[in-house]
Amino acid sequence: MANNDILSGISQKDMKEFGRDFSQLLRVASEIDRYYVKWEQDIVKYLPKLDKFINLFNKKYGNIKVKVLKRIDGVDVRILLNEGTVKDIFNNCASRIAGLKSIGTINFGSADVAEMEKFANEIDKIKDKLYLTYYQPEVGIYSVFLSKNKSEKMVELHWEIKESINEVSPDFRICAYYALKDGYSKKIRLLDEGATFGFLSLLSEKEKREWFDRLNPRVLE
Image (cartoon, rainbow, N blue to C red; front, side, top):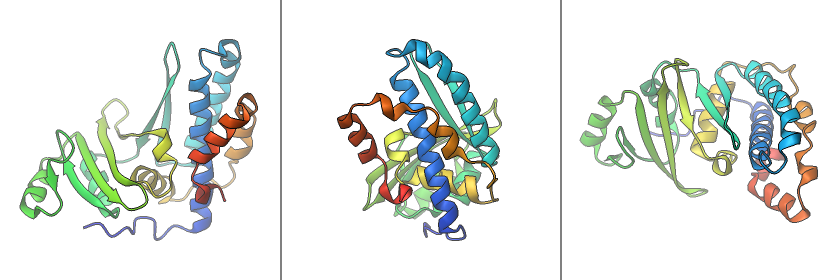
């Protein structure tokens, strides 16, 4: 079922730009969360800048919506995809990513792709939630969880910052597909906006190396 062609029609230039913008988004969000308590006074002035950055990201990439929820002790970043149902995401995108191993509508691993009848029955059950498991040599076993966000009338991709930043991971590829499949605004320069936060200047040299080690170098080259 998976043939790894969801991004085949997208140029490498566009992929590179989205990769840079997406990694910038995750860097800014994770650093604001990291310093929320430690640098409380500075964070107050950063929050309006974060809202501006998120709004620009959403304007640039029309089929993916990033939403920030502010907690008392930090921030949560939600990623929403412009698709009507969870099953649409599976049919149009997730099922076509190489390495799909199993799916489940209640939990992970309910039906293996090799169990054809059981797998087909599980697809028929897809409603508001879907648990996907992939195996890829580059990242090993990888889990993706999708759920219907009824208030936004979109599908939420529940994600992990460290893995989502890797361009071969399934959730990065899902995000890239929706962000780029219908084009995007090339006039908006998110790298310039993200650079104004200056969070890396607050890190020690060791912390800087650890951050850049988490970034996939192929995304940033």
